[in-house]
Image (tube, rainbow, N blue to C red):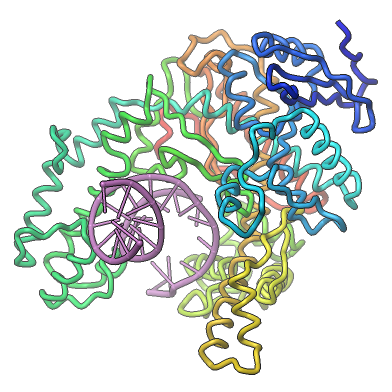
Length: 573
DNA sequence: CGTTGCAGCGCG
DNA sequence: AAAGCGCGCTGCAACG
């Protein structure tokens, strides 16, 4: 075997992987750094998984591939777990849009995320369409890797490197969570549905409980054929009955006094459960008592994850009780209380706000600071500050925060001003906000045209303020997403170090059937599925991971990020 | 007929 | 009480 020896201790090894030119088989180069001369090993498709398994066991290199989204699942299915990786597509997006580099990576259609490809296919953006079939080509992968390491080496500090490492580890975790799945009891889910809706309808009709409500709504509005699923018809029927709402949305109906309101709101609630998470959803998404959504790392411009299929990030709390651990196993579930304002306090180094954030309830701390009178006021003021509320109760309270927490408010206010002027803002680790698009720029320049009329100007101002609210929120939401990414990575690291337990094997697939694993992630909460005997060790890992994430993101600045953590066989609250 | 935009509601 | 940020999914209604 002519594999290069492992580099000197402490020197990370990289495994750069791509397809061979003729499209048959793979090329793998083990390198100790970007300057090393690539001498790739040729591996046939049939030998590939075994070869990766062997290299991982021997070298634990940082696997550098075009995209883990396609690279990793077949390995996991074959029982191969990777410790470290570098996802070139995800890191390309970061290094292309960052303002932490004097010379960011040039945008290239070959390295777009799959969700960006669809936009790029629209004419105008690029002459080239979707990435061609040889986008995985080894030489292209190697060249892009060198470009990315070069860009990271030119960065003024290590923050972008930390972000790229965390983003790539996040992609590993996303695929691992899909492979392991979230334990989900079909039986418990069916019980919830039958309690709320009645028996499963046999041939596509409405469930009994919804049908009764629809009939009652029709009677009350004097229209037997009225379909409550049609907002347009409902609105007309309501107007005929003297209920002058502007929409049929829940919050507007709730403030109207009319006998139809109660059954209609109840109908909407049941209809949502039936259509979004009813028996059809169960049949499609839950197999062998596992829910396996696809997580899209970096799917949101702020760095938050998105998901595809099954609405993984919108599972209603009503259904959380269907999340049931396997026999002999339990869940460790943890979420952060008020992550975003805590992150704002730390990233702006606002000592007064960090002081208010001490302890489990930041809102009570803000009341203690004297900025506002009640916990509810604190909540609205903080949300208004981060989202850019200007009117109503929330908008009225924000100026009080400005007096007490000038540094924190200065940070979000500056981000809003930058956005309004068409500028780019950045998270703490250097993820940049998108530049304004053509439509936005045109609206602004038209408004300053000599021939501009009032309508142009007010529309441009309105679009500018819209963008200001976006960039105001971007810096906070994006930095909170970075904290969560570091937390996830630290949890995974600690779970991997736990001893293999003596526990009954589960349905979680070849890698995770017999060891503690992350099972779910939602912005600021995680669910770990683990053998009962390891629950306390896992809980300690999750807590220690939060402390480590805080220390890495905010070194030297004291900020509390308390967890609400439970050990239970149900993930429900 | 299939595609697209919108309203509404779930999550943080 | 407020209606300010970011998402995905569904069904309806309008469109070509």
